[in-house]
Image (cartoon, rainbow over all chains, first blue to last red; front, side, top):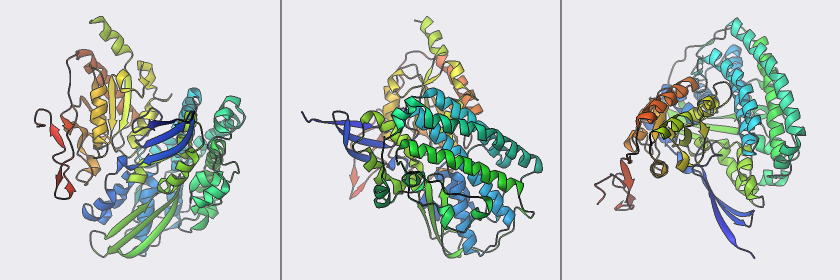
Length: 361
Length: 174
């Protein structure tokens, strides 16, 4: 007997950090159709950027688009404005900015891994990953002064310089974190009960990844070689030992592996940055008002983040357009859900690492 | 039934709802539940079910899309209940104050017992707020608490949907 059952997931659900609503149509337990409503968190930031706040205040406003990748948002906006003002940053500023972006990537990926483990029913793993994540949060607090919404990026540099003691602490903490990540790598790849929930679940093939225009770890887990750190030259990533992580599976397991290897790569990069930190000023003065148009792309923890900024030499900008990674990933998400079991839906959803406050702005 | 209050205090369950925040406070709530800060030592469990909830944690200024859900969740929680507003934008609107799709803080819609400041509120402050909420929960009784506003039908002025007339204070709906 074929009977279609409607099951809603959200907007409030135990497995969701943020409101999003999925409407699943299922045959028995198999999902056949999915509808998504992602607009719960729409606040109107793009509009407020051109009417309510002057351009100098905007790095702190766009950081509030998303708490997880706040630094990438404020950095993209700042780079766009600096391009319009023809500002040449020093290498020390670039290195300090890269350090915070990579630390942010580590903690965001670890949060996603713990959330995926929790939604697969492995509470102890959730606790373990969250406990291993806390030293990274402490590092961010030591460098910038706040745990999550650190307004570290200023137009013309960064707000705080890093002291030699803090630099030593960064290296020591990351050295201590590395064996923990290697243990997690073994656990995620060899644990039998986790493999039941992860392997072969939520498949996205290479062709589908190309068709649906996926980005970030979702695409790299399917074998699609796309990473903005590889393509753009706004920040000197090749100097600090960046490598692209690729997996072939395309299932939840492959996404976890991509995130874990990226954490290892980010740890190496952070250590390289701190050990080879160039001398120089950390905050330079900047003159003039932004005029013209600039586009900046950066790799956020979830994929490519694009900013378009247009100004005409006034205090208020003409247009700020934000294109976020999860927004591009929604068609692929809806496609992956089709054909999988309803019981796997929370784990699949967590493995996308969706950021709805980015998407709705 | 005074002896029940003790059990309620020793094992309060929380419900977390994101009414349009930036995720910052939400991940700090998750960090507060994790081993370093360990909110669970107070007997607290994060449930997804409003009907088993004692403490309602809300983050974010209320967006127009999520306010109906907020009021609905609040109405479904049985008394006694405590509301904790986590973060600056939940309390006053914060950086989002005055944006076109945002209400300034949740206390326009539901009565708030504890305000937790900070952007993002740190786990220590969240734990402090919840411990304060526990002492408030102890004093509360079964008297029914209502949200300030409920929703009628959608009203149109010309071709536009009017947002101001949609939400009315209880008692003046008709």
